Length: 165
Image (cartoon, rainbow, N blue to C red):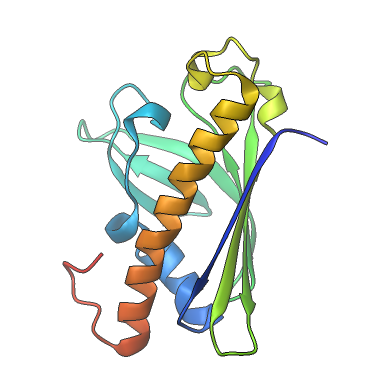
C-alpha cells in the first residue's frame, strides 16, 4: 500500500451540488498553500477544462496538474496530480467520493495516494519525515474541504454569488 492521505467531511448539500461546487467553482473555494504549490510561479487560478485540472498562472501560462480519469457527477472524481518539480516517473492520484448520507448531507472523502513515487528527499516533501509530510498535507486537504463546504452550502441555498467562497 502506498503512502496516502485520507480526509472526509460531511457537507449540508446534495452530492450533485457538492460535486458541481467542487468542479465548477474550484477557482472560488480553492485555497493555495505555499508549502504545496504546483509551480514556483503559483498561485494561479484553478479550473477543470478539457478533461484535466489546470492552474492558470499570473504569467498567462497554464500548468496541467493532472488528467481527469473518472468523472461521475455526484458520485466520484479521480484525477492525476503532479507538481512541476516531479520527474516523469513521479505521480500521485486524487480520488474524491461524494456519498449521500441518511440525514440528507454528503460525505466527501478525499484520498490522495501514490506518495511513495515521490522520494523522501524530493523538494515537494520539504525534508519532512513521511508521517509529518502526510499529516501536513492532510491538514491542507481538510482546510480545502471546509472551504468547499461553505461554497456548496451557498449553492444549495441558492445564495452563491460571484464573490462567495
